[in-house]
Length: 203
Image: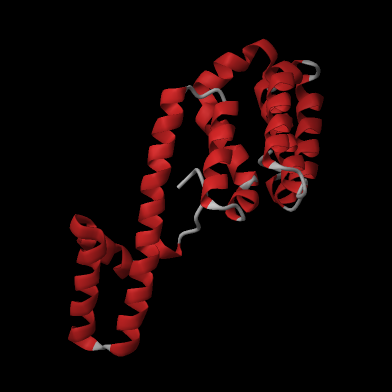
């Protein structure tokens, strides 16, 4: 792998995997299937996620059904254990490929679909309620970020020097309270919260 690093880095993900497996089989024979069995399973799940991402016209409910079927076929009787240890990662992987669907929904539709996704991933009622509460908090935070961004742009366009800095300090305090100083430090380093990409159900 070290000797072929440059060559492998130039390949597509699919071709790189083929080449890596070729090397493994040459060196370890049939034992390679057992040594890297778990990796192969997760590669299968990744393949299903790619299919789901490419299925633009399918409803989210059908995409979730495809994903659930893939997980069951891939892990079989090991699935409960896998879900116990990796439920969050597996759910986020699915959420990432349905972001476009979620972003075009009304707030109520999005809430219902997020609930169905989490329910489909085996979450109980109390967990669903905690997630919905967290979603509501996140919505408020993102709305706050948008309001702050708009006021900030107005101040930068209108003021300069010490007056600009004073006004910016005021709106940071207004929108972020005790976090105002942290936000100021973030911006000094070039990081702006309002420029982050919203990922529904994730951040």
